[in-house]
Length: 72
Image (cartoon, rainbow, N blue to C red; front, side, top):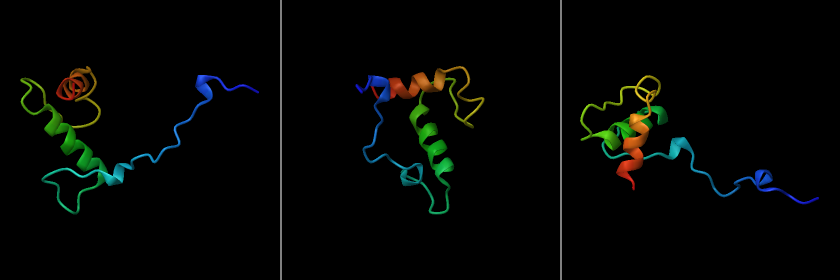
C-alpha cells in the first residue's frame, strides 16, 4: 500500500512545552506561564498589542502576526 503525504507523521524529537526556557523566568513558573511570558516578550514594542492570556489576547490574530513579523 502506498502512503500519501497525509499519512506522514512527524516522529523527530518534539520539544516538550515543559522544556521552554525564557530569560527572566522564575524556577516555580509553570510551562504555561513561561509560554505566556515568551509571548509577551515577542509582542513587546508593537503599539496597541498586549498579551494578557491565551484566549482573548489572541482572538483577532494581531498577536500571531506580530510573532511572525518578529521572526521573519
